[in-house]
Image 1 (spheres, rainbow, N blue to C red):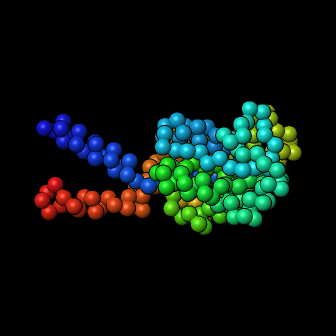
Image 2: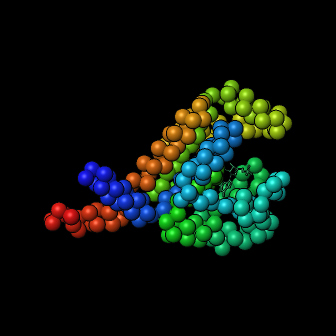
Image 3: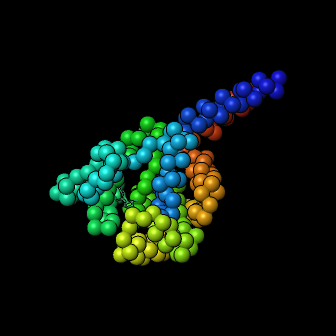
Length: 224
Ligand code: 5GP
């Protein structure tokens, strides 16, 4: 019956999804563009994601946990790791160092996890150099005026910091031409919709399904 057929095709779908390889989803966004909220939504909806925990030399903020938000390390330790090739990418952002552990990333991908990265544009470019597969998304603010309003509205930054963040946003946007997707966050629900579409589209890449065609072709001749 139609119902049974639907059941069969659903379980096949689940199997296809289960058998695909993991991908990286890299989210870059100037501060104030709503990246944190979008990230939270993705992690809530798609349980296959693991968040990439970076190493940083900056001080922990209140409520941040070592090993969950970041691995907080000294500058000496960071430099040692960097020289030993420990990082898949690293960058200096606002006077602190940040880096993504390479082995951990490869281990998660091999285990079929999708990895969500919140890294800056320089780091995203480096990662893209060695890991083309995946989805690199840049979130754009609707306008300079709107970004300024949002940064002010947070009430956490001084005027000098706001000016610095605006200048940084401009610099980052000038480097954003190579990303796979640009999403303007003028409406959060719509931006989220576009983000999940970009991610889902990336999971359909043949490179995520190395044996899919073969497994379908196996039963081809006898109509299986
Ligand atoms: P925060 O100190 O506010 O947590 O992060 C500051 C900036 O550093 C953000 O733009 C964030 O995306 C970036 N960042 C965090 N971790 C990494 C990382 O491992 N590599 C790079 N390149 N940037 C990072």
